[in-house]
Image 1: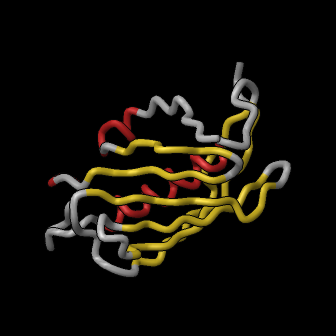
Image 2 (image 1 turned 120 degrees about the vertical axis):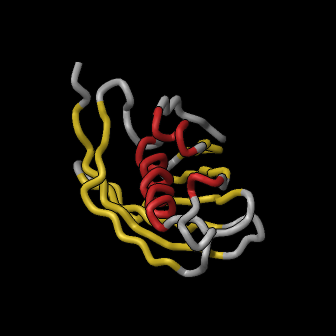
Image 3 (image 1 turned 135 degrees about the horizontal axis):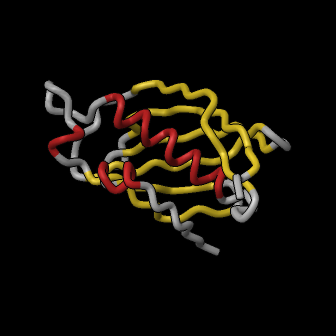
Length: 132
């Protein structure tokens, strides 16, 4: 079953991230490539790619939470840049490698619109109690 979670992130809106699906510790998000995401060389800025790693793994984590009582926060993020980000859209696919009681570890792969691998990354999230 494909689920979408109500992310309501002004930052996601600002950089045009869309959650395509998130369920059972897996997610897929997409980001339109536009002028403000490019660096001086005319390719997607590395910080934008790191954001996609964080956002995609965050969506995968969120798909495992009880959203009425839990939230999460990134505590560690790693990225390896494989190829310059070009084209019209980037897709990040994430899955969880470990889901503990308080820590979650996930991996993400980012592809361009020609299905070229652009970057890979991992992140650790802490599960927190949502403030009422």
